[in-house]
Every structure is written in C-alpha cells, then in structure tokens.
Length: 472
Ligand code: 5AD
Ligand code: SF4
Image 1 (cartoon, rainbow, N blue to C red):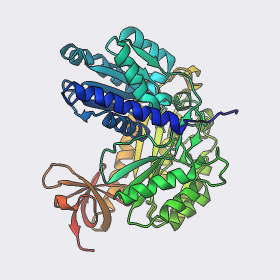
Image 2 (image 1 turned 180 degrees about the horizontal axis):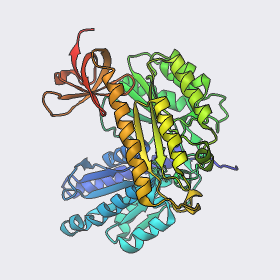
Image 3 (image 1 turned 90 degrees about the vertical axis):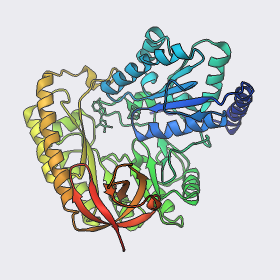
Image 4 (image 1 turned 180 degrees about the vertical axis):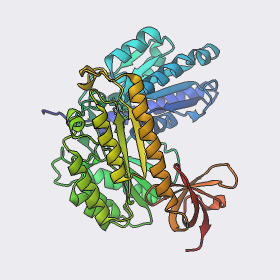
C-alpha cells in the first residue's frame, strides 16, 4: 500500500511553541491564572496524547483542575473503539452546557479518535453547540494554532481532515506522574482487523526514528522514571516502515543498555508478528518486564479468519508455549471479543477451551460493537443480544476465576515490586506492581513511593495481590 509519511518540520513545531508564548502573554495580561481540564477516554495512546496537550497548555500558562466548573479550557480526548465509549463521551460533552452557562468564556474542544470519523464530527457540529473546537489525532501537533483561531475568531473550528498520518517530534509533554511514563514508539495501524476502527482514525503505521526513541527513553531514566511503557498499536512491527534496518527487538535491547534500575514494558503485541526473536530478546534483557499482552480475540479458527487476524489457534498456542518455555515466570494477558458476527456456540466453546488451555493472568473482554465503515459492521449478525450477553457473562465468570487462582499462587512468595502511588486507604495505603505488572496493595509508608521494594504476598483475589514490605 502506498503510504506517505508526513514528518512535521521542526520550524512548524517551533512556530507552535511561539504561539504558546504569545497566548501566555495575553492570558497573563488578563490578570487571572486560567485553568484547563483534559478528560481522556480510551487507551494508553490517548493518555500519552493528553500529556502532550497538557504540555502545550502548560506553555500557554494554564494551570490544571479536575472541576469543570472551574475550568476556562476543557479538552475531551475521545475514543472510538466501541459504541459504549462514544456514548459516554457524547453524554459528558452534552453536560458541559452547564459549565458554559456559568462561564461563557469557557472554550470546549473535542479531539481524538471519535472525531476523526466524519459522521461524528458532523454530529458534534449539528447537535452539540457547546463545542467550539474539534480536531483529530493528526492535528494534535498544532493545537496552539487551532486554539488561537477559535479564540480570536470566536467561530467554531472543525479540523479533522483525513490523513494517513503524521509524525511530530519534540512536542512539549506534561507527564501525569514521576514513576511511570508512556513512550510512543509508533502510531497508527496497518492490520485492518475487520472489527476495528483504529486504522481509519489513526492512519497507517509509522515508526518514530530509533535514535529519537532511545534518546527519549534515556532522558526518562535520567529524570528518575522507573517504569517505561513503549506504546504502539502493534509494537512488533516497529521499524518496518523505516529504512533503518532495526526492529522492535533491537529497540528493546538498546533501551535495556541504558544504565539504571528501571523496567521496560510494552503494548500492544499482535500475535501475527510476535516472533521467537522477540521472546528471546525479552528473556535476555533483565530490564524487560516479564509480561506480554497478546490479544487473541477468539479461540475459533473460523472467527479468527473472519477477523483477518492472520494466525490460527495452534500458531497462537505455539507462541504461548515458546514464550513460557523461555520465561517461566511470564505474565500473560489478552483481549477477547465475544459475539463477533456469525459466532456460533461451537466457536464460543473454542474460546472457552482456549482460555482453559492458556490460563491468562488477566483478560479484557468485550462484546462486539459494530463500527461504521469496518468490514465486520456489514457482516450478517444473527445472534441476539441476550445470547451474546450470556456468552460474555460465562467468559468473564471463568476468566475471573482463573485470575483469582493465579493470584492465589503468589501467596507466601516474596516479589520485587515498584511502588507507584498512594491509595489513601488504610491499611493498604500503597499501590505497587510486580515485575509482571500485577497490582499489589501494599501496607507501607509513603516514603516507598517511586522505589523498588520487596513485598511478602499475604493474599490475592481476581483483581489484585496484597502484601507487606519485607527485607530482601
Ligand atoms: N467491538 C468490540 N471490541 C473491540 N475491540 C476493538 N474493536 C472492537 C469492536 N468493534 C477490542 C479488541 C482490542 C481491544 C483494544 O478492543 O479486543 O484488542
Ligand atoms: Fe480508542 Fe483505539 Fe483510539 Fe485508543 S486508538 S483511543 S483504543 S479508538
């Protein structure tokens, strides 16, 4: 497929920064420190995008609030993956009329995947007068310019042009914490799974340059971050669109070579491209977390083929076997869609037997949601909602039992965990993660936040482990 990679020139990005300072001077002249609120839906990629938006806002002189009645600028960063996500967004955007009534100067922007669909941009234009500015994921790099246009003209601005995708390096970032950091290594997706909207809204796969990613990882480590998650819709195809001759495994190895005590995580992996080289690299890199999120989607070969996944059940199980042989302590998580068009009881039974065979540590389960413009949305789908719900409930029930069984196996063990925050709930007042990413509620002092400590695990259920700090 012909694909044009659009790198935003440094001069353009410098112009956006200058605009930030211009906006800041104007806001300062008004005397009051303005406040912004960024409301994020969807995946980690969206979280990472919101951190860049906050980076721009910080340069513009904004402080931050969680209270929409206090905000002068609200940006809703949306997701389009399922109808449910869109309904939540529309409900919450509609409710902003109250905040706007109190503060007519409030600027409301909606961005992200949902608005990149023309019918959704149209809906916002027609039925949500409260919205002043709409921009798609490909326009994020020029948020300052779009903001200024909306403010200066006092006209509504809609900017969600179709695009195969841009790469913008060096945007300002305001990260949400100082222990864990997101690091986007690539954008977009080429897979066209028949149910999925992502390639349509986020464009074709494009990788950031190897040296740019490694340099950002190094600066994160130097800034004290202890847990770095490499993000991409399909990280295993990192580098295929570049002429650099380096792949995802090479990237992990290069980041692993950065001096310091930190963990490398990544998501998401497509089973089609998860190779033996990747598992061997993970096993050989001591900083690489022993966790892989490997979405299987279904246990039925027939459904996998209808989904255009390019692997079958046996290839998937073979990968799992190989990964576990190389890393016996590997934590394995997955996504599963129930009720894909045409899914029969037999297909569903294949999914149930697959989860028994793999025994995932955690599963994310979804009922199929037709997305306009995707192939699956046009497939005959005779199963009634009740049937899908019944299958979904059965799957979730069993998945939860398996997670609880796996978590109970930790009881009595000592785990090295990274303490990442306070919960405010006694006695389990800290939250921490094992190397494999399992949540641990820890009874300990807040001085441990940001540190790797050892924890004796005393309990475990479907959702989490419980423990107390211990000596090594
Ligand atoms: N309906 C239901 N679930 C979906 N996912 C993606 N598209 C859809 C859809 N149309 C799920 C997949 C994917 C996860 C992020 O969301 O399981 O891995
Ligand atoms: Fe939602 Fe997918 Fe967009 Fe992430 S990439 S925000 S999951 S539609």
